[in-house]
Image 1: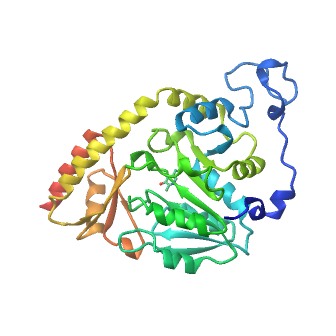
Image 2 (image 1 turned 135 degrees about the vertical axis):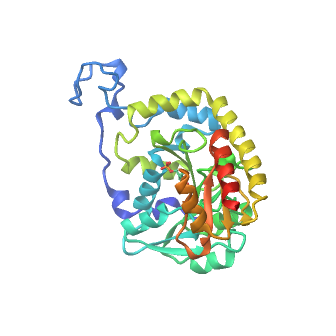
Image 3 (image 1 turned 60 degrees about the horizontal axis):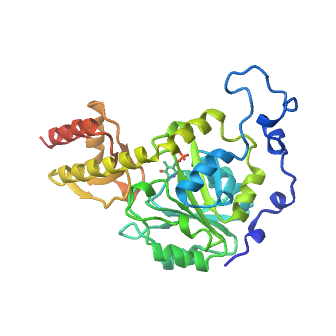
Length: 344
Ligand SMILES: *Cc1c(COP(=O)(O)O)cnc(C)c1O
């Protein structure tokens, strides 16, 4: 297994991080005249805690992981960006993704002038280990594995990801944005076993909080320390922190909503299976379902004309595929009505 210190970019390793006023002193205990804030209390006149200690304590209790293994980002997107900038040298290194998958990995590779090696998922949208090994070279620094995968919905083979963790000299980023909807615990409890494992979760899906922009990174303390070193000091704002704490304190509600979504998903899938123009419903472990139909573009346009927006794709492999998010019961009933209407 790789030594993480050797993977950190030289400039990141040698730089001095920005030292913010709030990392040294807690605002509650002092008269704070050091950061040019206003003293007038609007509820947000003070800079937020740069290390989000209170929220991390709640997350630590919920996920049963030490706070030193947790990182919070302004959405998962910021965490992915920080990972790329910590470990990948522009114009020199390469990264790998398993296609078709989430579009953000390629965008980040492009922004940072990194080669993106796309390894196609096999016919079941699962990992093709031989092809992955063939794509890796000594400049491969990050591998993105999205599980459950977006847009296909399935979990990736766990043993193969573990094999990858054991054989790859870089970092494996397992993006678990949808793991709370899956019938699997995911990888977060393995971060202490594998120093090169980075698990990415988010409050945007199961926690019903996409507007907060809160992504959660779970990893070995060495990787977390690198991200803390280069992150913008106040990357999580005070309003998001407060709302996230409130949501964490009512985690039962989140669990109930996830269960409800799974029930609605099951019923929706049985409706789908009765449609004559349906080719396939792909296996899903997420809060969406990917389907393949006889004429995807026509169905997409029809639903749009009825005021329902679903997702279609440009990739060849996803021709005639539509991704549908599981909404609430009322929304799904309306969608089902339109899907039956399209049949005629
Ligand atoms: C929705 C989603 C995310 C979440 O991104 P945020 O920036 O946290 O909102 C991350 N990864 C995948 C694959 C997603 O589909």
